[in-house]
Amino acid sequence: MQNVIEMHNYLSSVYEEGDARSALIRRVQSLQHAKNGVDIVSGSKIRTHFARPNWRKVFVQIAANHKTSKIGVFYCGNPTLTGTLRKLCQEFSHSTTTRFHFHKENF
Image 1 (cartoon, rainbow, N blue to C red):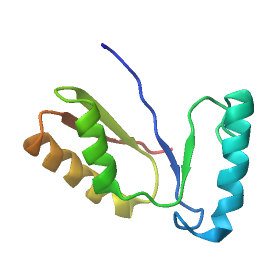
Image 2 (tube, one colour):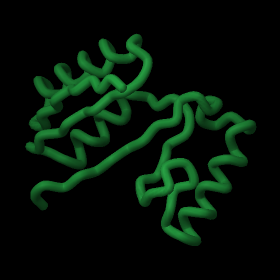
Image 3 (cartoon, rainbow, N blue to C red):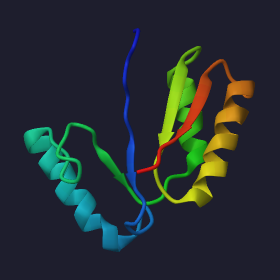
C-alpha cells in the first residue's frame, strides 16, 4: 500500500493508562467511536489515545507494521520529549528497515 497516512493522537494530560480515573473517558470514547465512528476529543475518525504512551513500544509496533517505509513523526508539545522522540527516530532508523523522520512543530 502506497502513500498511507496513519495518525496517532496522544492526550498525555489524562491519567496514566490503566488508572481507574481515566476509565470513564476511555469508555465514553469507545462508545462514541463505535456508534458514530467519531472521536470525542478530535471530532474526527482519528482515535485519541489517553495517557502517556510507552514510546519504545509505539516505535516497535510501527516499525513492525510498516517495514521498509518512511515514517514522519510530527510532535507538538512539551520540549522535554523532543530529544527522546528524535533519538528513537534515529535508533529505529538504524536498527530496522523502517526510516523515521522527526519533525518538531511549534504553534
